[in-house]
Every structure is written in structure tokens, then in C-alpha cells.
Image (cartoon, rainbow, N blue to C red):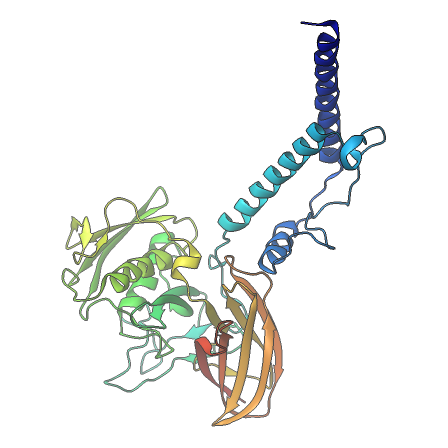
Length: 400
């Protein structure tokens, strides 16, 4: 090798070492300067969904940065190796963040008392609890629908006692061929307030009738399904049902029926999973449609929950002249719609911006003031493809 070639190689190696050291110092310096805020992830998510790829706006939640003094060289202020390495490192960090945005899916909070305006109060015909001390859920006679009485404020109605609690109960709704889960809060009587007691109350309520307080919410479990026993151990509830061995439903409905049980049971604090038994025996495959072996867990929210929820007021609630409408949704554009009608007359229609875009579930609260009357509240989304109304969820309420 000639002296000149040897010198060139040594020079290239020296420049490579300098670039490597420079890159290390740049990245260490920037790592020390980045301080993501608590709302950084939603901000990144919104920018990604909005199509922001940089341009005149920065997507990084931290401070704008520039190269340290002495880091600039040839090729646009950087040597090719350092510039390429910084680009690769930056894209790698971006890829990690985008991956997090796509996989972090917060589930809606349902492990506490219901939010204001989200409590339905179940009563028997004579206003007293059921003989076993657990108040049954709504069971409309024939085709008639008798919504349960609600307070509209989240406070117990007159006559309730400390032995009752607002428990989340999930139902199927939406497209019959591709149903999703919707949630109602039912105020139910309890014996001792234990996890087992709460699971028992919620499931008996769920299985009591074919629909929820909202007649659009349905229970796909076969008529006559009965809750035999419930045990809770180490955070896992074992639920034994009778009368549910056969059910002629589609695979999507069967899967959502299982998730209906899972989401209702695991809404109880301290319960994270469900084991299903039929007539005292484990069941590996329910109705020949869905795997139910082992411990069943909640499926991802975006796969099973309705894209739009009208959380409160609930169907049948009675509210004051000024109240809040609570809307939730899993929508890519984080934009829902709210319509209020009195009969066929629309009295209010507005855009509702949710707190976060999908795949997380965003929420929003809208202050409403109405004169006395009977109103239908509808939350929905507008298709970006053709402008049609989608995912409608409506509740009828009385303003006193």
C-alpha cells in the first residue's frame, strides 16, 4: 500500500471516529434536553392522524433543537456519516413512538361509581328489592319497553339505601351482523359489597332480560340462562351458568356475548379475568363458535366497544333544566356529533371534540340547558368517506 493510500485510510478512520464521537455527544445532549409532557402521547397521536409529517411544524413534543457548535461540516453542515446516523437514530425514535401510539389503548374507566348522570335505578313493581336482596334488572313485558327510573344526577333516588351501588353492565348494540359493546350503569342491591357480591348482582341483572334500559341494547344469551354460582379467587371470577348450552347465533355475536360477560365481570374492582362453566363443567368452546378455555380476558377496546357512546344521561333518565351530556368515542378524527330533538324538531346540533383520537377512547362533556319536555339525545359520527351518519346511539330523557 502506498503512503498516500495509507494516509487516506488513516484519515477516513479518524473522521469516522470523530463522527461517531460527535453523534454520541449530540444524542446524549438531546436526550438530556427532552422533557415530554404528560399529554405528549395524545399530541403525537393527533399530529400523526392529521397527516403531519414535519414540514413547517415539528412533531416532536420536546424543544426544537440544533446541532452543537463544532458539529457542522460538509454536506449541508454535517459530514455524510454523522448526518446519516442522526437521521437513522431520529427515525428509529419516531418509529418507536408511532408504535406506542398504535398499541397503547386506554380502556374506559368503569371500576368506580358511575359518573354524574349515568345511574339507572332498578325497582320492582312495588318499589321493594327482590326477595334475595338483589334488585333484578329491567324485563319489559312482551314488546313493551319500560325504562328504569333514573335520577339524572348520579345520586341515589329516594328510597335507595347504603346497600346499593351503581354497577356497569354491558350489552350488545349497533349492527346486528357486527355488534359492539355498550355500557349502562345500574343501581343494584348488594349483600356485603364484596367482589363476589358485585359480580353476582351485575350478572343476574344482565341475564334478567333481553334488553337494557335502552331497548337498543340487547342481551344475546339464550332466554332462560341462569346464574348458578360465582366464586372469586386471586382476581379470577369463576362463573357457572345454567340453560346456556345451546344458542344459534353467528360467530361475531358469540364472541361479543363472551366479551359482554368478561367486561361486566372485570368492571368489578379486584377482578381481572373470568373462567366460564356451564352446568358445573368447564367449557372449551361455547356454542361451537368461540374459544372459552382457560381464563378469559378483556379484548382490546377498539375491537369490541362501540365507536360512539352516549354515556349520560341514560335512556329514561329524568334531568333538571341544566345538565351535562357525556359522550365517548373511539374515532380516528376525535370528532363526534350531538343532536337533540323534541319530537321531530331538532333543537340543537353541534360538533363534539373528544379528548383524544382513536385508537384510545376519547370523551367530552357538553353543558345543555333545555325547557321542560321530553327529548331524544343522539351521539354519532359522520363518515369521512361519504358524509353519512354512523354509529348512532340515542337516549330519550325527560327534562323537568
